[in-house]
Length: 479
Image (cartoon, rainbow, N blue to C red; front, side, top):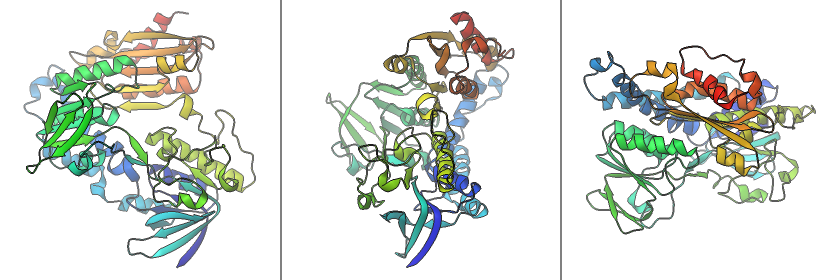
């Protein structure tokens, strides 16, 4: 059994774990990373990058068909094989040579295998051949193992071998009929993608489409999906599932109706990858989300840091925000605070301090790559009211901006600004429309920077662009 010592040991080599290790090394400490699958994690191979590659081809085709001149040049439908080849390239053909090489370049050793905490600051790594390597951490262990698709306890579901997001993203065939259980981000994006690739798609959205977004978002996306031929069954709930000998999947709904499909995608949420980390060795429950304090140290049910504060959790696994970019943001804070504590430096743990992830609660940006595209940051109007804020909501039709007319015919979109009336700052912003992702960072800066509404009048949007919506929203708000 080999034993190796480092200042920090990171379990999980996805974007979060990579960034933790990088920050630690930049701060002058040593770090090692443990990974049981592919370096680069879920985002690189089964989520962010390949899913957007799948969706982009269809989005470009729809955009071209809305612009006279370009429309006439479009003579066919998507080349499915070419779409999949592009997707494969974005997933690096599910090989991690490039990202593993990057770890080597920045001086971070990679240990492949299942990492388990065996004692305080000790991680045992079991390789595929059964060999065990023991890693000891002088200062901290960071859990960055992410999450996996949740498969609910529906009768017959597991036996029917449903798709999760991984199978949907990596498939090389388009099912003739695809049923989707769920109405959230993954369900909506995959319904958009596979409808564009030629599948007959049915969405079983018990709680509605994108239920945690502003209400107009779900309405626009539902309408768009239906226009694309998707059957959106709002309120439909699966009670039982079976796959017959011919491969057909039958989903029985709670009202007794059956939905048949060639493949079934389950997209109802995530579960933490903590089942086999040795959490029971340190008094935590395997398979549970890890609760953290403001500096992302793992704490017990009383809010006390575990065993003096050597264990940290960043990314999905702490359940604060299940988004890659937010996990990387947490990773920077974690890496920096570990370095600060190791060197006896001051810890900046107040709101917006260097060593905390304040934006997790106040300024989380998110893009949903449906048709129309959805971009949001901060609180919805409902969430702001629930938080006790006195707000004013201002809406504007994006199609009324001069810039939208350049996108083509049939432009549909909307924008919403949520203003905290006591502080006169924006606390939430939502956009729905073509390419609105590229407008989002301006809103993120306004929310995170708590820019006063009066000052925003001096941020002049260029003409003719869709960014003119900022001026229109301010005009509707008044001075």
